[in-house]
Length: 479
Image (cartoon, rainbow, N blue to C red; front, side):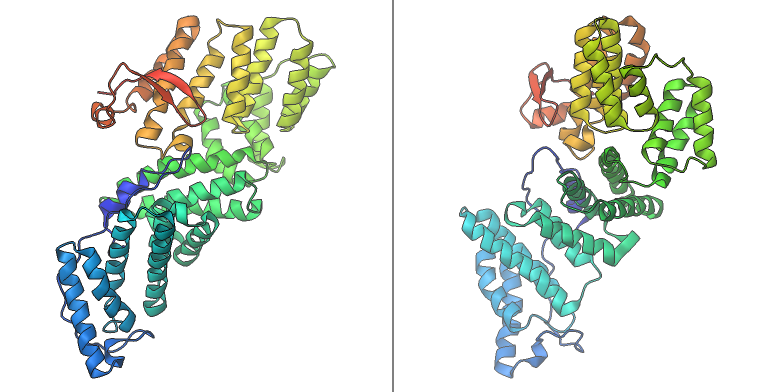
C-alpha cells in the first residue's frame, strides 16, 4: 500500500454513511526529501529524462528538484508551475521513480480545496484522475493505483465523478487483485453494489457473484492480516457483510449454500426453540434449497416436531400459513392482511400484524415495512412488548444502513433502540429480561463524551436520528 498511509485509509473506512453522502478531505503523506535524479535503465514506455535533449533535460531536472523544494514549504501554487515542467517533459522521470505522480495529486488536491468555483473544481478533478491514469500508463499497475483512484473518486470527488464509473473501477480492482484486494475499497464498493441492486441497475446474478466475492475477500483479509491491519478488517467485517445481507430480501439473489453456511449454525444454538427452528427453516425455503438435501430434511422434521399446531380452518388464514410454509412471503403477507381486515378481535389483529412485521424483518429485510406493521400491532394491543422489542431490534441493526458500522452515524441508532427496549419492559414486564439483555448489549456502543463534545452537543439534549429512522431521542454516552 505504497504512498498511502494506513492512518489516512483507516480514517476513511469509518466515514461511510448510507443515508447521506459527504465529501471529505484526503490527507496525503508529506513529500519525501528532494531526490537526486539519476537516470536508470528505462522501465517505462513514457518519456524519461534520458530521452530529452541536453538543454531540456537540464531544465527538467532543475524543475524536479525545485518543485520539491517549494512543496517542503507548502507553496503548492508555486510548486505547480515547476511540477508541470517536470511532469509534462518527462512523465517517466528517471525510468523508475513515481513520486512525482503523488506530488501532482497533492498539489491539485490543495488547489481543489482552495477553489470555490464548482466548474473549476470539476476541471481540477479531471486533472487529478488523469494523473492516476498517466501513472498506470507509464508504470503499469497491479490494481493498487486504480484502487486509490476509486477510493478518492468515491469519498473525495463524489460530486464530480460518476458513481457507475467508480463502481467499475472498484470491480476492476477486485478482478486484478482477487482475494488480496486492498481493504480500503471494500466498504465503498459494497455500498455501491448494494445501491445498484436496490436501484435495479445491475443484473442480479452478476451482483450476487460480486457480493459473494466480497465475503471471500473479507474472510481472507481477517485470516491473513497482520498488526494494525487486523482492526481495519474487523471494522470492515462489521459493515460490509451486514449491509450485503440486506440483499437476502431479494429472492434468489444468494444461493442455498450461502444460507446454509450462514444460518445452519443458528439452528444448532437452539434446536428445540420453535421460533429459531422456524426462522432457519423458512430461510432455506426462501433460498429454494433442495428439499432432498439431508440438512433441509432435518430442519423440516425439527419444525414439524417442535412447532406443530393444528392447521386453521379453510380460509384466508390457512392460505396465509400455506404460503408462508412454501416461502412465498408476499402471498403470506397479503393473506394475513386480508384476515386482519376481516377480524374484529384486537388480539388476533395484533398477533398477525406482528407476524407480518417479523416476516419483513427476518426474511425480506425491509425495515421500513417491518416497523409499519409493528406499530399497527401496537395500536391493537398497546401493552404488548414484543412488537416494541422488534422495533428496537430494527434500530439496533441499522448501524450498517445508516453509517459505517462504527462511528457517530452508526452509534446514534443505539439511542432510539434502547428507547424502545426501555418502553417495551415498561408496558410489558414479561419482556423485561430480554429487554435488559439488549440494553446491556447496546449501551456500550453509544457515543462517548468526547464524541458529543466534539459536535458541540451535551448529554440530556434532544436529538433527531436521521436515516430511515427519523425519531427524536435523548443524547446519552457510554462513559
